Image 1 (cartoon, rainbow, N blue to C red):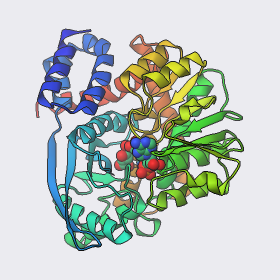
Image 2 (image 1 turned 135 degrees about the horizontal axis):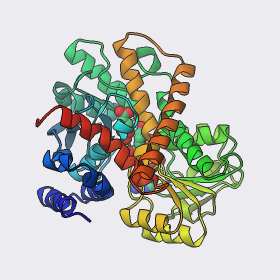
Image 3 (image 1 turned 60 degrees about the vertical axis):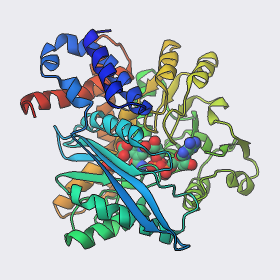
Image 4 (image 1 turned 90 degrees about the vertical axis):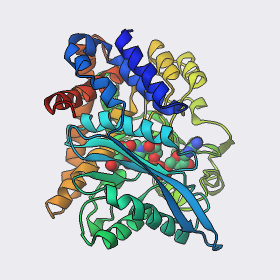
Length: 447
Ligand SMILES: NC(=O)C1=CN([C@@H]2O[C@H](COP(=O)(O)OP(=O)(O)OC[C@H]3O[C@@H](n4cnc5c(N)ncnc54)[C@H](O)[C@@H]3O)[C@@H](O)[C@H]2O)C=CC1
Ligand SMILES: O=C(O)CCC(=O)C(=O)O
């Protein structure tokens, strides 16, 4: 491994102590760029890697709100505006109790490459707060969102930085934030994406991430002589991404046999289809963050407390919940059981060790920064819709999404082949995403 790359990684760790998730993605991405840096010494001369791992701007702020009992609550809010070489900062907001700079920076850094892969003009950013939505009333969520955006509004705008949803932030939260943003700036503009359809939202954005993941998985299977139809698929989570993934898998003739939550997983031998997919929305809207009620409602299904769905035999695994869901022991078990395909839906679904074990064991891994890029791609289409003061039809959006996902798969495959990695989509995604951003940074000078 080149000394240059290892030095950048070591300095990044020193400059961001304790931020282990951020270190993890920086190691994963930078190490796969070695042949690129060898071929392009000009990137090293211009310190492109050092500049990429340092956010252009990081904002930390206090979020003060009053809960239903009248008690004043204080949370920490963040927005890391990572890289604007190819467009305004773009990326979601995460509300979860474990949010701290290491999580937001890992997400923001990954977003640079993901957004580049879409082929659309969007830079990378991410934000959020250490707010736990579990068990909060609707009124509490509204007051929190209003307080959050009352600070963040001054740092965002339709050509500056355009936040969206992520874990813990869906249509309801975007609505509350947009309402408050509009009230403060007195402009109706596309500063947040994932909006409701009657107020600027895009037909198809809600399901876009999940649909895109399935299109990407389909490309992986087909590139290896297999079909999605008839496959048994184990997915995790029951949130927005899991829901969209389940919908599209069913539509394309695959069978979804698991969902999961922090409480454990559900195995449904009859398949999570039809009204059971709609029921996932009810589970999410309950605000309890548990999946066990599924087995009470559908008695053929079984709930396994405290376990992950990866122990179930399936043809394809799609993690859709949170980071590092697939760890070393899961990867070893996949290899022992002859698993062929894992397509990451959640951001950074697997640890770096797990990726290595899976790839060394012959498993085809679809990396999240490519596979889940359909969501942000449709967010960018929503930005265009808002700027053009128009409305796109679901057919227009879905056709574009499918083309974008096939294009991303092919870009990953081609970049991997060109730089000697064979059909390694993980390396290919990093290289293809990096090249476009690096060239834009070179063209724009030292800034
Ligand atoms: N919403 C979007 O458009 C996009 C989301 N993603 C990623 O997809 C993943 C899921 O996001 P969403 O579906 O939007 O969030 P969500 O809040 O709708 O759903 C999250 C799901 O993950 C589960 N979960 C959370 N923490 C967990 C844990 N520690 N163990 C097990 N399950 C856990 C929750 O129970 C829930 O079912 C995240 O990694 C997010 O970064 C990626 C691209 C776009
Ligand atoms: O739609 C967006 O802007 C961002 C979605 C997101 O947070 C992600 O791609 O991880």
